[in-house]
Length: 268
Ligand code: SAM
Image (tube, rainbow, N blue to C red; front, side):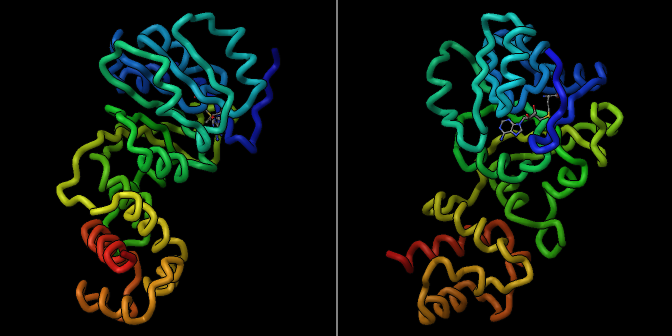
């Protein structure tokens, strides 16, 4: 079956065996792991994953590739779901598997939706032991960016709230076919318990997304979707000692948690 890479699905297939081996090795898979792969493509990683893991569950949006993979990889521990990962019900899908020690999520992510994929997955609160993702190098550098920097955004806040993030290694664009314009990096995200807990985690996620929606606007402007009246807004600003013209990028993770707690109280 001849496969032509589709740009609209961010298809850049890995062709460098060293890189493929290094990504799989960094996932530290055992015979008792359940591996969830996002975007298996032509199976560059999948072929190794089925050898290392107990089960592999893969989500691929492109049905041509699903057909190709089913022909190409004959492994009885591989399940491929033809679905957009953004719409997948992962917690339901993994109920079919049992007797595994850990869940590892892995993916050479389609770059056009890296941020929604990672934000969506982390907000789902799945019991994942570690995430190994290939993303654009430029995005990898932003993951641990701090307040007051131009790269600080909803993704960096959520990553720092949910995980310990590290960049494992860089991957040149020539390791792919077709070669993307930019270099890539493999990152590891290890979930951990952030010391400060929001009272309502869902609301914290919602506030985090909302306040960075329009970066150039003030925090107050971006809070409009919560329909808080002026008195409520003023009380929140006073209690949290926020300046009138403050923007989201000046708030630490703790500040955003405190803000969501206050919004929650004010909505009661
Ligand atoms: N894993 C393969 C590799 O390393 O060669 C392919 C990686 S390619 C960068 C990204 C893959 O994700 C493609 O196979 C693409 O079709 C798939 N994809 C794109 N958008 C997706 C989505 N929303 N849900 C699931 N898969 C998606």
